[in-house]
Length: 204
Image (cartoon, rainbow, N blue to C red; front, side, top):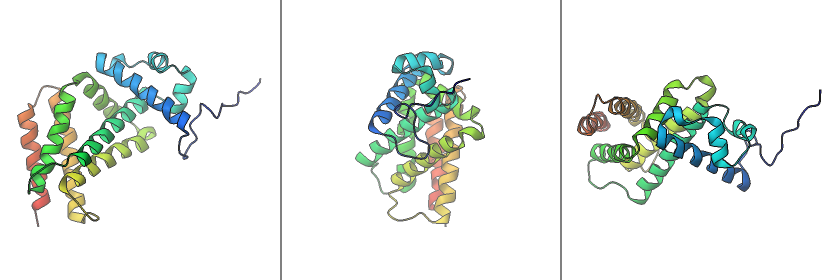
């Protein structure tokens, strides 16, 4: 039985930077998935429809993203990357680092509030992620932590105390997002929870 050699022009090389063509193709895939999720949530993101929307072969899509969970976690990674860039362009004002962190993450909630179906799809994907998606989940976690550190205005490496506080704030943010999406928490309650968690930054 003949074997098929993957086309290097369509297959992202493991552990290597993408070529310009591969990066552009990956971005089209993410855009197509984002649009589908924004219109219909998690269930609306079907791999064949994503491939059609991105104008790639279904096999090519699976070489970039082995499953819908991988794909939607990557979508969340892109959304957080955009937020990080926004925070760097327009840093939060104020002298209190805790309030800057709470304001930055509340700003993210307001952005998600405009597209609740997309937010639901991304959070469900994170909830379904198993060990095979650990690298993508780690990148989401790393971006969230970097957003918090940028909001603090951290110039040098964070202390162990700050690292611990950032982890708690990150967990609070994720939990608050789940509570908000399920209708168990309002934006005001989310903001209050984030401010409470961010106060850990000021503890000795």
